[in-house]
Amino acid sequence: MILNDLEIERLCKEQAMVLPFSPDQLNPASYDVRLGNQIMIESVASSDFVRTPINGFTKENPWLLRPGQFCLTSTEELLNMPEDVAGQFALKSSRGREGYSHALSAFIDPGFHGSRLTLELHNIRQVHPIPLYPGMLIGQIVFHRMFATPLVSYRQKGHYNMNETVMPSIWN
Image 1 (cartoon, rainbow, N blue to C red):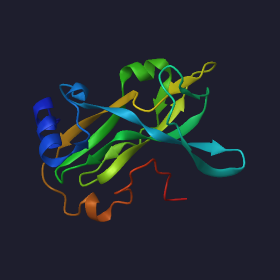
Image 2 (image 1 turned 120 degrees about the vertical axis):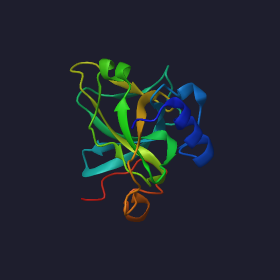
Image 3 (image 1 turned 90 degrees about the horizontal axis):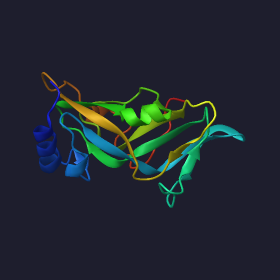
């Protein structure tokens, strides 16, 4: 079952599901999330991603993601998922129309906690860069109530808990 605005607000206020919580970011069946203040980009010198702060960039003076360029970034919001609630990240439709793409690996397990959600963004435009800056609305999270609490929570077995910044893959 997809949670409605009243239940999302209740969980945010009572269980700190999304921090900080802002009523302005609440939708009928989702919660808008903003871009955080760091990205990770590829380097010519190494196959590893390089952490790059984007503090100081603004809507008027953004960091530009070049055509075809890929980066990792994270949400401004910190997530603390209840044991019986899962989430799904989706780009705001306006961002998709502007040329942003997301790599679709944004399922949020119940028990994911103390972390910002890492996003995989790609500029699919052919000619023009697209802007990135802290605080920009980038996507939304749809929350789903599970039929039952899982036997083993992501809180116990998850690899990306307690990460307050953008995180690269731990599998390489």
